[in-house]
Amino acid sequence: MEDGENGSAAERAIRRVEEDRDFVVELARELVRIPSVNPKFEVGEEINREADVQRVVAEQLEAAGMAVESYDVFPGRPNVYGHHEGSDERSLIINGHVDVVPVGDLSAWSVDPFGAEAREGKIFGRGSYDMKAGVAAAIAAARALHDCGVELEGRFEIHSAVDEEAGGFGTRDLVQRGRHASAAIIAEPTEGEIMTAEGGLEWVRVTIRGRNAHSGWRYRDIYPQPLGPERDNAGVNAAELAAGFIEAVGRLERDWGRRKPAHPLLPLGINTINPGVVRVGSGLDEEGLPAVMTNPAITPDVAVVDFDLKFLPTETSESVRKEFEEFVHHWAMQDTWLREHPPSVRWNLADLYFPPFDTPADHPLVELIKRQRAAQGKQANLTGFPAVCDGAHYAGEGITPVIHGPSGAGLHGADEWVEADSIVDAAKAYVAAAAGYCGTR
Ligand SMILES: [Zn+2]
Image 1 (tube, rainbow, N blue to C red):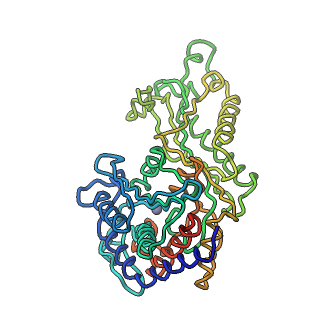
Image 2 (tube, rainbow, N blue to C red):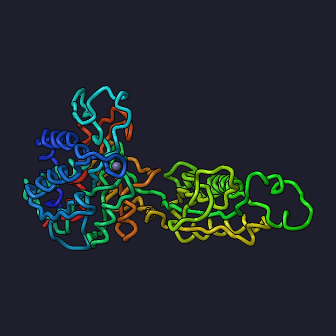
């Protein structure tokens, strides 16, 4: 994968990142100063400025000699795709997202969330750590390679995506448009570690049906009544069925967490099943939700429970879906009413799906990043990512992802910050990875 000349080209570009360190730090600050809150969380013309961030990204990639395309994923919310032509076999993507989560409680911040204040080697602000620093580092890597005249043999791409924080529809759009490569680095913050494993995520909806009745006659739903219509037409409370179901899912969750073989790079029990949204009422509307949710005098006949179901990197979506559906079936079989009125299970809720990944520890990208960190006297450990990120969408297309990026704190919280030096380090790692993985001509 490398020869002497290859190494020296990479080394020149890595030195260039160091000489040019103000560029990457100031670029990260410039990006933080443009509020780009994902409009799915909070709407406001002055804060939903992903497009303005993307304009800066596109200009910088063009200045770094890349061919750049930009197109809307949602109206006014463009992705930016920059690339250098090259071979498929050694093609590499560096991915970052430009949307950020809302500021939250402003009184908890000690700095202006969009001020990009620089102090004590840190840059403060919403999106500094997650993940405009990573985007800036990817751009700085492309720029250093360009400045040093390094010609890569494999295709080198930078994907700057919108909408990561709300399902990853920006990156999904890039892969659906065929922007593929053999591997991808996700420039999310990792404290300089290399994250090679991530669980999968599904959203699943379980709809449980009961039978409407008037609460005035609830006594006969509960206590034995004489044989006859009073007994036959008793209400069946869907809220209570759902409560029992949620409890049963909790037991399944603990069983999965304790008994399924743990992944060596991930905390035990990350395969959780979170009951996140519960809706109960009467009648089913066209969207599959309870039509009436305002009258507690009705014994409800519809309960809709939405779960966020996480599975292990070593599992597949198909096997987990099957297991969950069998669980629902067996739960229902224990109850006379439910046996005749089985709950329905719906996957692909809101079109959300994150495939898992488990990149081998000896993948060339891992080796290249490790070696670059070691050259600076730093160690890059392998870890797993307990949540999900855009790497999933590449993995789903057979593109091997690793996550590697800067250091900081305050993810989605107040006083978010990123360490300036760590942005420079990330840019160097990206240069080493691009030169080593893509190879030089
Ligand atoms: Zn992020």
